[in-house]
Length: 476
Image (cartoon, rainbow, N blue to C red):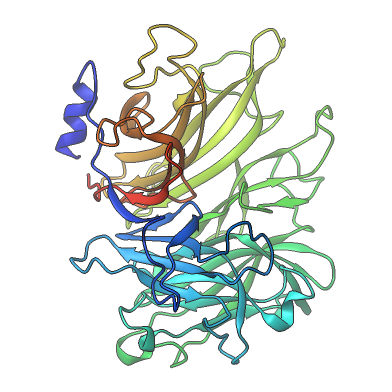
């Protein structure tokens, strides 16, 4: 466990914020931009291992909204390296990168980041744009090189490719994708797509383990595709009479996977007042091929809150260690049966042991939790109004895990926090960070913003500047 976090957790009074490293802001020149233009837009970043990646754009003319001559793409940084250079993963046209077939990359979507820096992202060529953003391909870029000449892409799967089940892929959800593994150990991409038969499904693409020169793109790799589930898949008991209709459809319902497990949001699209309505967080196991619920609406009781049940879900995250132990976390809203009390939000986690099986749900943080450092002396402003964007890392002991999340207070002020145990919270940074001299206007995490190393976050400043920042890597 981090000594610094141990001290912070035991402290009373004002807690020091974690030092932040600036990766890029509105004064940073977009790498390899022919106009040497600075960034003027960022998405919230993602983190895996020691890498941080984000979508950014720069060079737009003032007031331009459409067909702007901008340089944009996905960029990454190895936070463990002394080389401070911001690396290019992909740049879109004009003047940018091309698909493996030679057509220019016109649009890029969200990036999924592996722990070795390898990245999978959605890309569409100029020829595809007329048919909509859902066209195109998922492309793989291995850990970005410091040299543009060394960069290359490999097509994972493209619209029109054969999909498992004697059909073809019609569209991809550019935001619902998750990567695990490394180039050396094997890369696994889980994503949602629709087929030309009209079915929505959850699929996995696997690039086998590569060694030596065969790690290079296009040399020796052969992707295999498998269907995990689709709209014809029965939901787990007690809902085996109905099938999944919603399957991790957008960035607000992402996929998290590690090892032989996939954690995802799903639902049957029944009416909210229908007692058989189900949406929730579900777990798929490659070993058994089965889907089980972690928590679902109108069904799962909230532990320790008599008469409360879950009625809505946000983001989810998981981690699995080498022993097969796993931790599953999710954001949810809970309601009390009588309707007399206001709804509550929180993040719950479940720790499953490879030796002893499924553990109980644990309430980690939520709208009943006091915010670390809050200057407000009384409820409700010193309590979290909202929490979400959980990311989690599990220790090899199978017992200790670290949760990172975003939280808002009753006045809408934001912060990023760690939890090492239920309601044992420390502050990563918040609106009153003393190093930034209370200049923070907005804070945003992405999923995942933490993968056992640095925490990556977007900060908007009161002076109009915005940027991507990172903490130091955290170890147990």
